[in-house]
Amino acid sequence: MASEELAQKLQRRLQLEASGAAAEGEVEAAPGAAAEAAEERSCLTASAGAELSAKLCRRHDINEGAAQPRRAAVFNPYTEFKEFSRRQIKDMERMFRLYDSGRDGYIDLMELKLMMEKLGAPQTHLGLKNMIKEVDEDFDGKLSFREFLLIFHKAAAGELEEDSGLLTLAKLSEIDVSIEGVKGAKNFFEAKAQALSSASKFEAEIKAEQDERKREEEERKHRRAAFRELKSAFTQ
Image 1 (cartoon, helix red, strand yellow):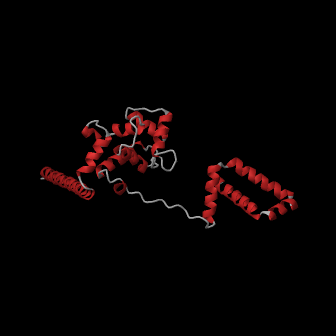
Image 2 (cartoon, one colour):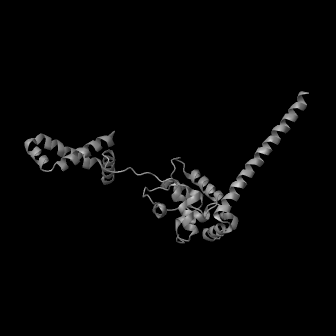
Image 3 (cartoon, one colour):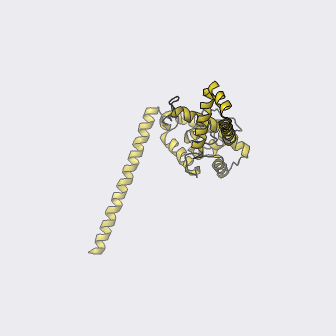
């Protein structure tokens, strides 16, 4: 692979630089080797930008045991965003998946463009980039689900400007806000957050979900029983 070849070249470059005076002596003794090293350095500079070079350096350090690989922290939306109910977070997740057309776990610039158009608030290319930039914690130019939740977190905390595209997104989304009318996400989410304590709210929501599943199962049983009775009446 190209990245492996570049990594090998980078490793050779690091070895040459580390050799110091010995490397200089080698250059004087073997002009052909010096030309080869210069060609490799030129190829490396032309083929890899600063960002890729840094990544290759880090990969080399990890392989050599000089650095530890970064471990992604486990993200739990229910514990990190306690101001939202389970149902609200699930609604946000459904909305996120709806517009994640690439099914890669991110909403990129074009997917955000489509999202804002569907919400009836189209944005310019620069406006879309600024929207992502407001919550893009890892600077990858797209929205993860956690960063998507940050939009509503910031709206609830009143941390978004009135002309912010993200505030427009929060207000126009159909995540329970329509129940209260268009009064602004901040007042709505604050009222929700104060309604129940975190523990009792979760218990009530989980119990409601369990009760709903039980009702659905009972309905299925009744339908199956009714169908069997109807079938037996025709077979007699």
